[in-house]
Amino acid sequence: MLGEFVTWILALLLGYVYPAFQCFRAIEQKNPRMEQLLFWCRYWVIIGLLTALERFGDVFVAWLPLYAEAKLAFIIYLWHPKTEGAVQIYRNFFFPWLSRHEPRINRKLQEARENSGDLILFYLRNFTEKGQSLAFDALQFIVRSIHSEVHRTDSTSPPPPLDDRGSANSRNSGRTAIERILRESPINLIWSGRRRRRRD
Image: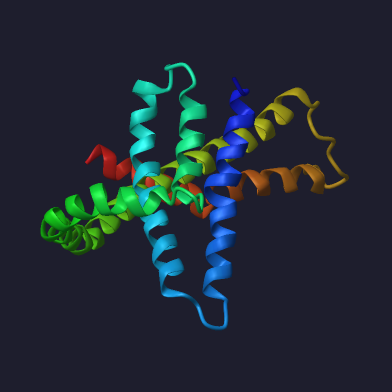
């Protein structure tokens, strides 16, 4: 019994990397043989469907003893030159099933293609509204933090010394300028507008 991680690595190498390299070699030959190309196309059709089904099926059968090893053996069976299981499984199972259901699958794909624009717009609209709301909340938190820090500094510091004209020095007047800027900042104006709209 192989370790789960070792089996996963072997399935990745023998199920995807090695076949991808062999497929590359078949394509890049000067005179590619049609049988080889057909074989690898059939292999990838089977692997693609099995990978999609595996996402749901593994939940129910992954607990079986030697399941991962059996899956690895099946992958090797699919591409091994002596067995060429991909050809047999494609001709006996996948081709009859896919050819029988091809019109229905094409119709569903066409509907999905037509509705994908509406679906993308729906998600974009909802996520941009949520993102905008989140950004406003974050900006309001930052402004409040800065504003409360300025007020805390004002309350803990001693009263500002007066200069010879009897007014506060320029450092303190700078602080009130910061408060004024924070109060009149576009962020606060936008946020107060949102609050007014919510009340209405």
